[in-house]
Image (cartoon, rainbow over all chains, first blue to last red; front, top):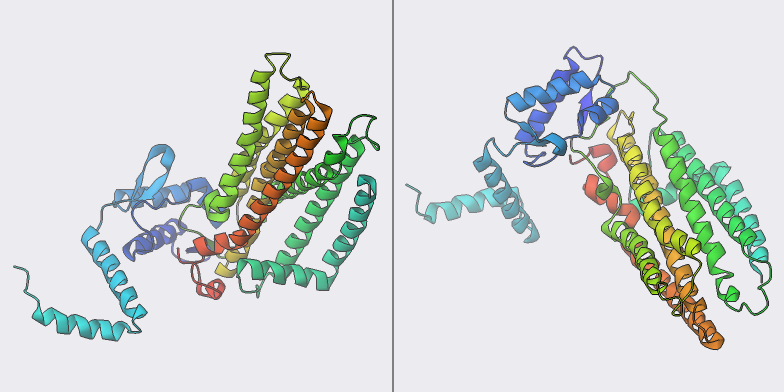
Length: 122
Length: 303
């Protein structure tokens, strides 16, 4: 979800750029997810197409997204892939514990207990 | 009961439905029904706009249904021609099918027209970060069902055209055959274009709640658009089967085949209807775009 306030002191292109970057970093947008076309997003946000295009260009320059011609702009597969995979593994783990009626605190405690008995990677 | 009597009865029912739709209690009932089917919380803000859009859509759909119904009744002969026993099996399914096609056409036209209304506002705006397509609003059963129901009459038409190369085998009016075989695929192409217009339309929303309800109405509009070629395909398939039966030289056999075909076709349609309704199509967009149940409108979209 993108929120753009035209009365904010932050330029609209920066509002778009930073929110997309944050969502990619937080894993809300995943590699391969397609962003809306420039014209459509500009229309929805009440911005000029050039404003959204500038935000997309800066995101592309930062390696957050890539433009694939007719396929549009998609979230790049680059970035911290290890961290993303670790987050996904953690979510699977938490879901398994939730099915057993355990919460996040139990998860941390179990990780500590089990981790102590495991050989440490070199 | 003749088709004419049925059409008059349908008109009276439609008039009552329309009158109810536009009274405040009827509007609230429409809103609650939509919220229940989509599993959405009732809108706190913009409630009047949502109710107005639901009322307008219902009016367009009802008017289209009546128009389709009456056009079919006007086209059908009031009494079957002597010796044309095949007119009896089509007397009721065709006006009803035409009514559904009219309903879907009118609702789709309303969706396209309103998609072009783009009010401007300098209030803070909200938009979805991820691109969305028809698949986010219309479930696979409806999308693929539509494709199949448009391909079937085209395939039957092609088969009949091949058979007609041998004039002794069968004879069907080529113009009618061409129309029945080609109109559903043509409507499918038209519906894809109409869906593109709806998806590309600017959305001026300023809160997640407003976006969720706009999604609900957009889902309904796209489902109307998708159902337009589906109804046309079903009715064309029904009609083409009757044309095949009509071409059978033995009259008794032809009547038996026509009756059996109507039964099979209507039974298949009934099964399709049950399958579609069981898939809870109105809830599809909510599960795809608003995975946090019930409270999503206040909590915000997942992405």
